[in-house]
Image 1 (cartoon, one colour):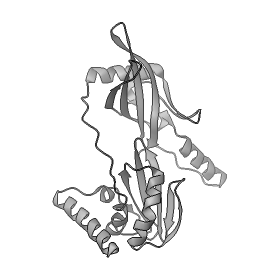
Image 2 (cartoon, one colour):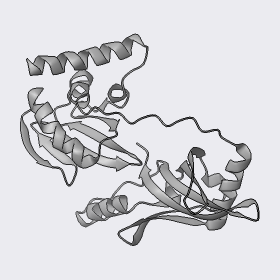
Image 3 (cartoon, one colour):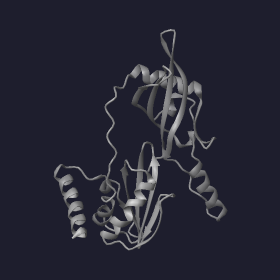
Length: 247
């Protein structure tokens, strides 16, 4: 009965979205080369929480589970691999099928993740402020993401041409009287250094494979801090919250 409820729930979700004229996230992100298939969905759950809750749901939906590693955000079932990675304030969950599962089949599994991220409130985009932010970031030159005391991920901004996109996503007052702006930027790949990708490329090289040049733009979520000096807001600092290549 539980399996039937899950199957019906997934079908209703897909049907309702179709009626509204929009494909569900998993269907939009689905692609297959005829030998394998992949899709992804976003969730507000942490990577660890995703992997802890999915096995029982996948098993109930008919998947034969093999192993899970919640701390690493991965699990494997027969013909199916799932990985969960932090993406800004949300988690990106990728489903890969080695048997080229159909869009319907793979979306049925992806629908079990649940807890889609809550939409952020509308933030007015002030052209003058955005222009000032771009100028401040060019003067800053490099912004980094500090993890475990080490800055392995960074973005170097040298001109206005580096800004393929910049949008303000949130504004908040800090406890010390400063003002923080969360921004989302799209930057050229050559302007960014992503430690995980560099490690993957290095591993491929050591294995005798020549990695393909990465050219897709990079999504950079950052926080810009401004301090009030003499009644004027002046740029104080900026740091990366999340950085990843676009798919």
